[in-house]
Length: 156
Image 1 (spheres, rainbow, N blue to C red):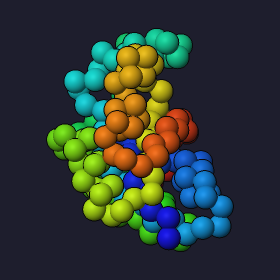
Image 2 (image 1 turned 120 degrees about the horizontal axis):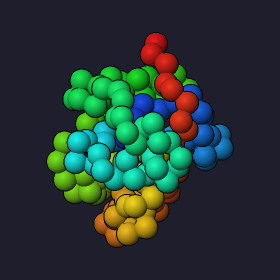
Image 3 (image 1 turned 180 degrees about the vertical axis):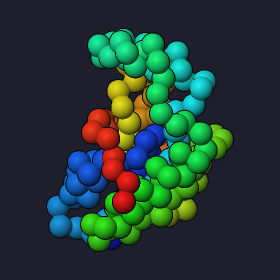
Image 4 (image 1 turned 90 degrees about the vertical axis):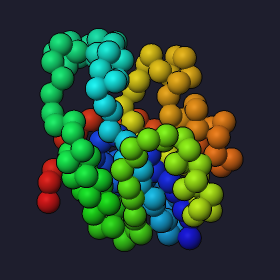
């Protein structure tokens, strides 16, 4: 079985789930999902990214629930969506030191790859401070960076 560590910052959409579960064809995939929601400390960077994407309303007003309960719901939704495809999926909320946790998870489950699935973060990417760029230097397995689909996830 192929093992992927999947780093996300919001609930997986149906398009995201279909994409990550079909990346390796018919091979069985098991996922370890690490959910790290964007926090208040990233508010300025998110606003700059929103302006770059032409989403001026989002740059002016942060919307949506960003608290710990929202992160738990997002993780539970994402795990259920992955399991509904027949994939194995476990996960946890990232609270501190995301790259250290990522490295320990990759080593602990003998992961074959890391998939970083986030919205575009142009400022961080330009300076190579995004998760994927930083993870490539730390984990010792291939790191695939994908952009999350923007459709709103539906609760089940």
